[in-house]
Image 1 (cartoon, rainbow, N blue to C red):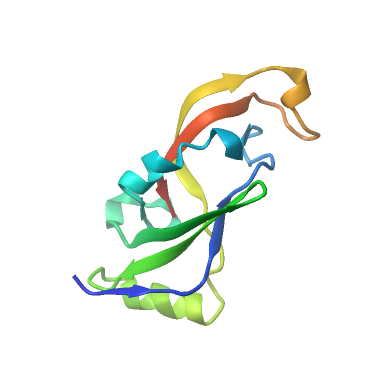
Image 2: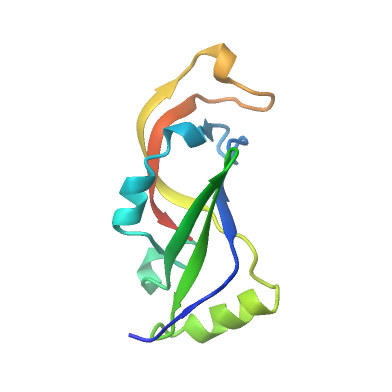
Length: 127
């Protein structure tokens, strides 16, 4: 398999409220679970196959970063490398989140949050 590691960090999660109205605490992220199979798809589209593997995970405050290794054997691999290197693709997000624990406690909620705070979790993929 041909790959290309991109020397650019992507923040794939933080403690902000997501589009679904809940938030995931960084302190509850089981990063070892992510590292067991750190894969991703373009735009979370599983049907098109794995296009990225994530490496060099780093936590800074509530933000979690990683660097992508692009699968050049994938039909979209070269295009994704180009999109990243040319600044057209500059975001990543956690997907297929496995929630192991959550809380409705008000002291854990922040403005704009309408659903529980996820306190123990991991994503099955990062796209």
